[in-house]
Image (cartoon, rainbow, N blue to C red; front, side, top):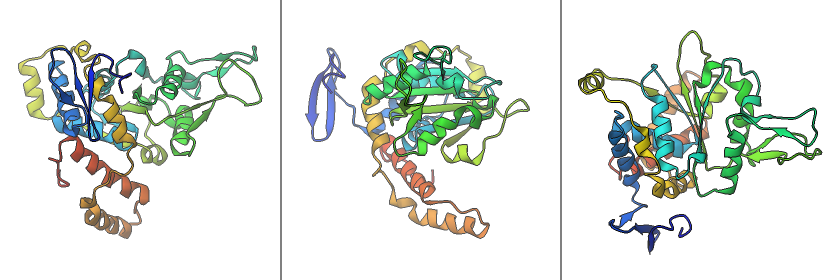
Length: 316
C-alpha cells in the first residue's frame, strides 16, 4: 500500500488503512459509506445532477458483477455517469477507455484487433487501446480499469462481444487472440482479470438492437428515469458539466472498491425469505431463476448497505 500512496503517511488499524497527507486530516479509506458519499459530492461539484441512490446503485452494481448496462432516454446522463466514475476513481487516464460502438461492427476486430495475415510476426491492435487496457490491468491488479462501450446496441452485441461474454463465465477468463502455435509480438491470449469493469450505455429506438438473454444474464441493468423535479431544477440553473475537476479525486478509494468487488463472501440473509417467495411466484409461470441470480440479489443488497454505511434496507 505504501507504493500505491507514496504521498501519504500510512497507518494501520486492524484491517483498515488510514491515510494522512500534508495539511489534511486522517481519512479512513475502509469506511464503506465514504465511497458513495464522496463520489456523490464530486458529481455535485462537477455540475452533474444525479440522485445519491442512483450513484450507490451504480457503484454497487459494478462491485456485484463487473458488467453493467445503463439504459434509458437519450440525454439522461448515462455516459456522463460512467465516465465520471472512471475519471474520479482512476489515478491514470490509461485506466479507462471510452469506445463509441459502430453500427457496422460484425466481428470482434474493432475491440480486439486481428493477426496480420501478411506479416506472421505482427498483430494489429484495435484503434481504441482496448488491448493495451486489458494488458495494463493484467499487470496492475490492485487498480480498477474501465471499458465503457457507448451506445452498445448500435450493432448486434453478440457479434462483436462474444469473446468477452464467454470469458466472463470461464474459469480462467482468457480471451484467445490467435493460434498458440504462432509467434507474434503480442501473447496469444489476454486475461479478463477481475479488476476490469465493463460499462455499456444503451438507447432504445428504431436504429438499435435488443439484447439477448445471454447478454442480460451476465449484466446488471440500471434504467435511467428523469423526474419532473429534476428537469425543473436543471432548467432553474443550467450549467455545463465540468468533468475535469473529478480527475483522480477518488483514487485513494480504488483499493477498497476492488476489495469489495472481489469479496465473494458478501451476502445478506435479510433477503432470503423474499427471494424464496419471489422464486415461487415466478416458478408458477415457468420463469424461475437459478442459483447465480439468487446469490447476486443477496450480494447486491449487502454491498449497497456497505456503501451507504448500513443505512439502506431491503425495502429500498
